[in-house]
Image 1: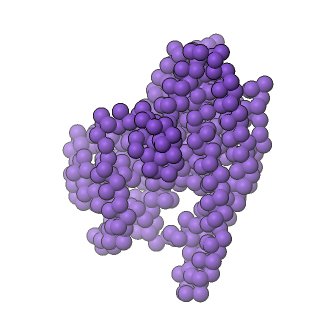
Image 2: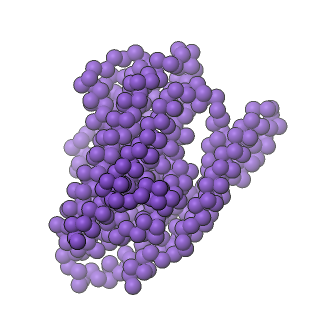
Image 3: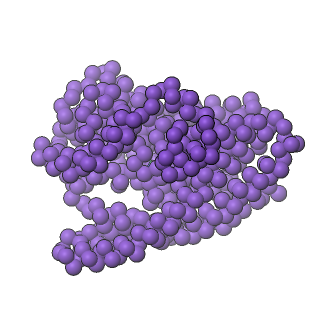
Length: 440
Ligand code: ASP
C-alpha cells in the first residue's frame, strides 16, 4: 500500500519534450543574443521577451525548490525507518561512501590530467586576462569575502548538529543558515529516523505523516515535470540570450577541457561502473534517467533536481525506495563528481594563468581538496565558487583570479550539475545492486 502510494503520481515520460524545450530555448537564446547586439531597438525587444520568459523559468524552479525541504526530511527519515536495522543502514552508508570516493577521485584525476596536458592557462592572452579580471572583479570580490568567512574544520563539525533545526531549515533554503544548512537538516532527519526506529509503535503516526509529506512532494514534482519543457526552455533561453558566444570563444580551450573531462566521466566512467557494479546497461540507464539530466542542466542545482532524481529512481530504475531515498538525498549535497572535476581544473588553470608552478605535492593537495570540496559544495547554482577560492588560497594562487572564469561559469555549472546528478543516480543503482546481492 505504502509502496504503491510512494511510487504513484504522473508518469515522468516526455523525455523528448523536455529535450525539445531545451533545444528551442538555446536556439532562440542565440538568436536573441544576435538581435540584442544589433542595436537599441533589438535590446528593448529582447528585454521585453526576457520579462516574460524569466518569470516562467522561475516558476518552474520554485515548484522544485518548494518541495526540497519536505522531501529531504521525509526521504531521509523514511529511509532510516524503512531500513529498520541500523547495521544494514551502516552498510548502505559505507557502500555509498565507497562509490562516492572512487567516482569523485576519478573525476578529479580526469580533469587534472586534461588540464596538465592541454595547458589552457598558457593559451590565454594577457589582454583577455586583463579584460575578464576587470569585468568580473566585483563579483569575484563578493565570492572571496564569502570564502574568507569560511569556518574552521572544528566548527564545521560542531555545526553538523543544528542548534535550532527550524532555523537551519530556513537557512538551508535562503542561504542565511548559521550552521551547515542542508547538511544539518540531514543530520537532524537521520537522528530523528534512528530514534523513531527504536520506538516504532509510538512513532507509527509520525512515520505515516512523513509518508504523506513524501507522497505530496512527489505529486507536486509530477506537475512540475509537466511544465518542464516550457520551464527548462525559458531558463536556458535566459542564459544563452545574456551570455552569447564571445566569452566562450575567449576561454575556449578552458571550456573544452572542462566539458571534455565531464563528458569522459559521464560516458566512460559511469558506464563502466554501472556495468561492473550494478550489471546495468548504460544505454538503458541514461534513457531512464534523462528527465533528471535535463532538469539538472536547466536548473544548475542538484538540490532542485533531487525530487526528479527520486522520481526516476523509483518510477524508472525501480530501485528499492529506502536505498534510493538515502543515497540520493545524501548525494545531492555530498556526491558532486562534476563539481570536484571542475574545481581541480579551475585551480590548475588559474595556476597556469598566473604562472604559479605547483609542485607534485601541491597538485596532490589540489586533488584531495577538490574531492573534499565536491562533498562540501552546496547543491545550488555557483555553489562551488567559494570552495574553489579556499583551494586557490591553500596553494598560493591569487584568489581574485576567479574573476577570469566567472563569465562562463553558468554554462559549465549546467553541465557539471548534470554530471553531479547522474553520479548520484549511478551510486544509488550500484548501492541498490550491492544491497540486493548481500540480502540474497
Ligand atoms: N551547481 C552545482 C550543483 O548544484 C554545484 C556547483 O558546482 O556549483 O550541483
